[in-house]
Image 1 (spheres, rainbow, N blue to C red):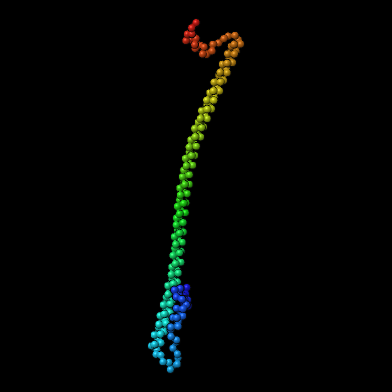
Image 2: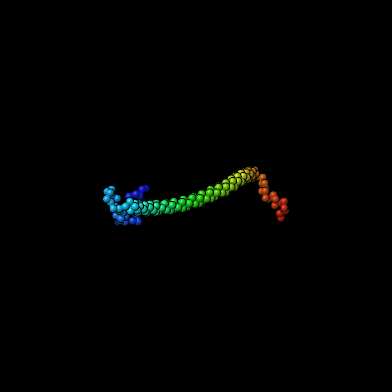
Length: 173
């Protein structure tokens, strides 16, 4: 950005016009001029120095503005970095929670598989017991049918438990 022709933020238009008014007019080209070349050269040098000082002040003011902008950008970048760090931390926590949930799910699945295996074993055992009970019921039914047949034929047969008691020696026998 060029600062030539602009007033510095620290100086008012008055100080710029004062500096311009205090500079001597350019030397005239007439030979009857009473000013010497050394005086006019010193006056020109003074005006040049004042102009350079004004330009330096303007450049310093612009540099301060740019530095303030740079500080603001740096502050915004720092804030963004903090937000990014917080987001990364949150994502890391979410990843850890997700991993924890996956591990817990795997554990529950393993326990469920064990329970299913136990339930299948219990169901098999129940099937075996049901088959045995059915077999026993069939035997009892056959035994009852045989006894009914014996009763119809008139030949009493002792009940299985009566046979045992008789061998032990019941009174009266």
